[in-house]
Image (tube, rainbow, N blue to C red; front, side, top):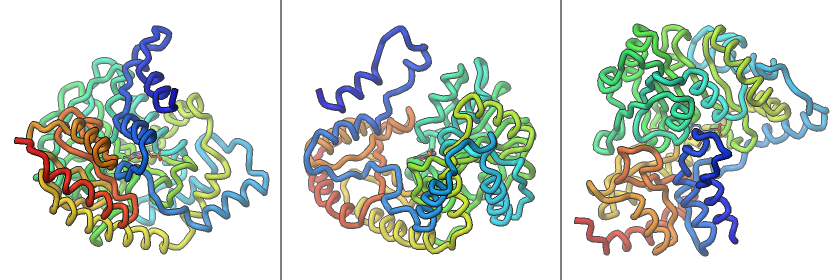
Length: 401
Ligand SMILES: Cc1ncc(COP(=O)(O)O)c(C=O)c1O
């Protein structure tokens, strides 16, 4: 039996041993596609969700030095004091905001931060607003604790911008949280400051938490100054702002993330964190300190490289029949749509089987996103060219009407 078969069986287990909420966790479309691709020769991946560039030298050196210096024990529960201080100083300076180490909790990647923030608030009878499409973790984690999700769809014709009025209109008496993710995975869309202003104002007025996932906060193109919830909010009382080193410094495997929130919220989340992962990885917290104190060249070069790829991807999608693209302003994804009614999952599966190009079907990211594909440009320009040398002739032969 191949590894991919074992994985799929594990995910689809009906064994009553498991808690119903665990059994109800969806088998991520990303896993399905990547597992299938693993059994095929000569696959080109447009499916990758992590940077393809190596981590900066100073980060790797700091991690090795921390290990050599015996930094292999636990840190304090909120995180390594030097990292808490560095993060508060870095983001305080970046957003001109008075942030202190008591406003930060270090987590095992943004993933743990998202887990803590959503499951600490979600409960039966509580509603959460989540854009659709969105990153795969939010809705299942909310539902796992009995909460309900109201999806607010976004559309390729509108660059997948989130309509703040649609978010405000979706608020109900039992709405406890609004999840935002800009730059967005899977669309690459960056929400302008006005969108954040409108949502944050309404949320503060109604005492609703805004949980903002900002892991791509440095992957912003075209010279746009990044509008962050951390900067835009008037105070931290109603916000939890999450990010990590994973994408900015190619440190995804080092698993260091964080939450910025009010001191009261951090105290509560710290307690939850102690019962979840205890503390984040110590040597890689030191690597994070080095990342924040390093120069900006790594980020600038990465941005330039991704901008080149993004621009070429826009041209390639434009040249592809049946795909409607747009200009993503951040992250390293585009989420072009297929004609209305066309099933993106069938298209992604056929594309993989018939051309060997692995994309991620839209429905992975929400119920309103069936006729779309997520394309990642976290791969070389050469791979992008080769992928579209296969995709374009294949699409030319399709008759979707
Ligand atoms: C929007 C978004 N949030 C969070 C994560 C997870 O980040 P981390 O590796 O820091 O856990 C990802 C990873 O793909 C992501 O795309």
